[in-house]
Image (cartoon, rainbow, N blue to C red):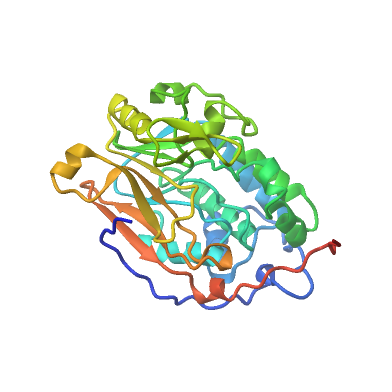
Amino acid sequence: LLRGPSHVALPGAAAPARGSMAAEGTPPKPPQDTGGDLDFDEWIDRLKNRYEILPERLLKVACQRLKDILIEENNVQPVQLPVVICGDIHGQFFDMLELFKIGGQIPEKNYIFMGDFVDRGYNSVETLELLILLKVRYPACITLIRGNHESRQITQVYGFYDECLRKYGNANPWKFCTEIFDYLTLSALVENSIFCVHGGLSPDIKLMDQIRVINRVQEIPHEGAFGDLVWSDPDDIETWAVSPRGAGWLFGERPTQHFNRLNGLDLIARAHQLVQEGYKFAFTDPHKQQQGADDGLLVTVWSAPNYCYRCGNVASILDVSETGERNFRIFREVPASASAVPPRQLVPYFL
């Protein structure tokens, strides 16, 4: 792994104490709806500081507002510098709060989240609701890219569906959120130089204009360009190979060079794969190597520290300044995340 400048954040968040965060014992009661309109600033504060999730009615309102914003976005959403580029979060809410402390708060900073906001972690509801509220309140400051876990099928297997049932007592909130997933953009383009996508490349896509014409308002297809963008991985091969994931492709140095050259890119930033060191470059750029630069054609950014509460990895965010200078900021899990206890199952499982 190639290391760059980094900031190491020491754990410092307090352990959770509020109702929606209850992880053991009886399931928390659904959030109380006291009536009134949705005040975005108030609920952003309540989520960040008191860990209170939205009542079902207000979540529906927030999702409707977000849908109106997302439907206007491009499949390749343009983003201006400065920006902080983030990888998978996977429901690690307290670690995401730490991420904002390190990268800077919205709206002072622009953010790109490259998908997989939910599943595996124990607080996918809080994680997604905070991102929804921030996107509606500051639509120009945050770009949410669809990952392979932003789908109905995957979330029914890896935790988000069950968490919605546990915290709300019914599946309506899951339905509101998964409908929003269909409207999330597929990629982002930072100042025409950094292409951000969840998974990777597709043999069906040579030019970004081919991404712009994809019909994205649907469940993620198992095959084709759309599925490849959220499922593919880089690998130490020359061209293409079948992916062991059963979806997407493994892509090598040559297609990455071609894609960057044809589209005038300096870098592809993607997530989708756990990286123990927080980030990892792939495919050396011969031109930059001659100049002594310490990077490659593509970088994987991973933003869930101690993934699944047991992997022991650090996380990173890619902070790109107004002048285009890149700085990887490394951080570890906070105590509230490190002490996470798996929620008790609603229904006992028998072998």
